[in-house]
Image (cartoon, rainbow, N blue to C red):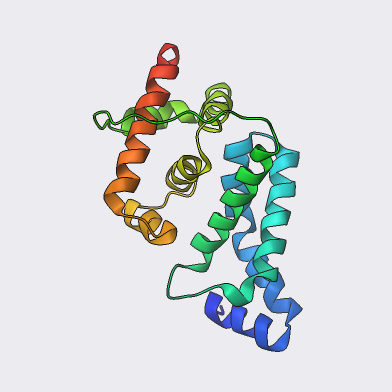
Length: 178
């Protein structure tokens, strides 16, 4: 099995369609699932997955293997595609307040309920795109805080604080689901 780095090299230097197909096959399901969990709609997730791969392949020359894995970079593109789709809707952003941190483990079980997931995603969409991105990378991308901080070029403690404040807000908003 060729490494991502080798496939990317072949795509950039040789224009290898076979290498591009392999790269897409390797990450298609993961990216689709990640996007579907955010939008809750199969057709929208399919469109966003396609858009993300097109953007990734078009922007492949800007990918830097030293900054993140290809998967992480691809998920970030996918996250931006979701944020862009939501920006097309009229949204008023809510602000997070500095409050105590909360534990995320209690929320994990509830997130897999489709009705709650849809409601949570719509609620999270009411916050600034930066907050949405942290949430999406953590919950759907399963990235660690150091990975998110590195990807977003931000302080890890700031990332954690924003994430946990959002989790607290979600708990308050969806208290009746617990």
